Amino acid sequence: MLPECREALALKPGETYCDCTLGGAGHALELACDLEPNGTLIGIDQDSVALEVATERFDEKFRASHTPRTPRLVLLQGNFGNLDELLVEAEVPGVDGFLFDLGVSSPQLDFPQRGFSYAREAPLDMRMDPGNQTLTAAEILNTRNEADLARILREYGEERWAARIASFIVKARERQPLTQTTELVELVKAAIPASARRAGGNPAKRTFQALRIAVNGEMDVLRSGLEAALRWLNPAGRIAVISYHSLEDRIVKETFAEAARGCICPPEAPVCVCGHEPILERITRKPLRASEVEIERNPRAKSAKLRVAIKRNQAG
Image 1: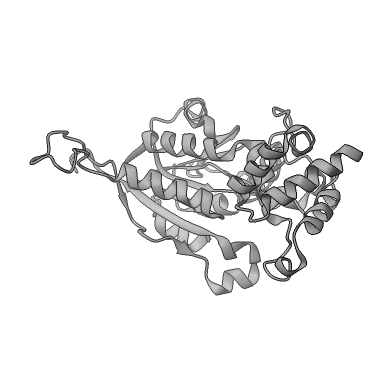
Image 2: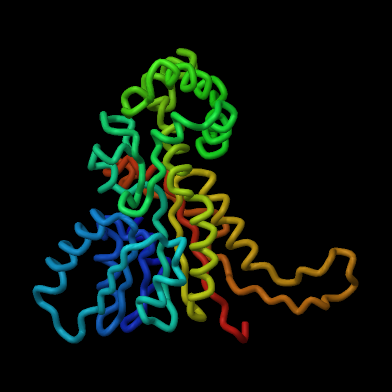
């Protein structure tokens, strides 16, 4: 959703833009052009492989023909749940545009050994930052009790058959520990009735989503990252968030709605005495969706939802 993000963020020369989920730098490379001359691009990703790919692409596009007018590039390894610390490291007073492109990135899916994809055999890992994380999907599957496994699948994967899948997992691991993605896929297929497997794509996708979220603590990280971004956003600055499932989108929607609230007095109060002022204005009441042309080119975009808000001026 590059064109939609570009229009929504409306970056200007000399401004500071922060891509909190840099990935392969697809968005950042194009949006950086809007910052010329003398802007600052901050790219954050906890995945060292993604940062290496992004660095190479930036080198090709900018540094070979570097001039004083080229945007200042600041690439940082970290989790956007620690956005405050990362932006202090970037040495910027504030940010004019934030982009969060949530979920697993294409580089992560394209390296099967990372275990994110249910379409390829790999170890059950799913860590976005293997160098600093110890909890893996295999550990969750092999150590959590049946009730907790069912909760994870139901809460994070919105999986209708969560209890049945959890039961199958527990029985299977009694024979031997689960270690490979293909083992889990076959278990899920066996647990879900055939009539429920005829539509909706690979039946394991919700289970893999749930495990990835649990391994990386994605829901708590998202809340922390959004709250920090609102603190750092300059007046009239914009924040854009692309989510790929209802759990993420609900958190974004609720965070924006809360920040856009004015009076918080009880409904029975005759006049406002709280003095509470909204800090955001929602640009998108309903999320924007990817175009049919983009979906045809990139099927992953089909579930994408884009929400955008703008920081109100202090006088506003």
